[in-house]
Length: 186
Image 1: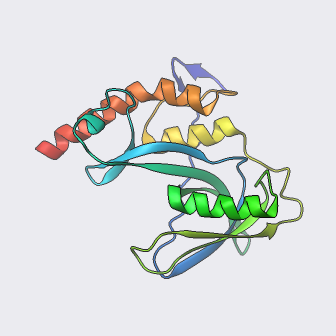
Image 2 (image 1 turned 180 degrees about the vertical axis):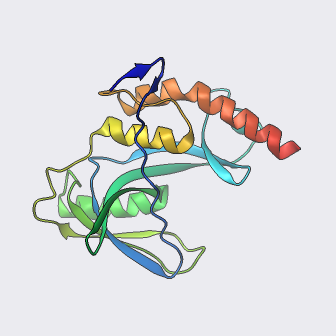
């Protein structure tokens, strides 16, 4: 992949799976782990926390942990990779159920995702592993790159850890939060 400065020519773009109230979906996990980070809600969207000295944190704008998994979703012949965002409580419950089963890697695990009402939490229930899907995981740096694209942050580099990418992305997140806070004041 050709590089132009910090920005790769091609970014990983994955849409976010929206599980609306009263609906559900069956997906298969394609990422080896969850990518988690703190987000702030500003100007009608979420922004990754800018880390130490974050303007949103300094202004007491509440933050929350946001986890992201890559999942495979299929309807008929259409099969897509999507991002699935989970809250801390959703992830803790789900991961606890998986630990009780003794499952280390979650790649290839079929999951029932549901939300009872519009404001109710997302619920993830593990259903079991799908034959032939266990080895087909998405590279962790690609997951980071999809998150970077979603949040308008610097791309992840091949082989880069989540911690290293977050540290490198925080100055850009800091600037985006400053701009959002200025827009909210207008």
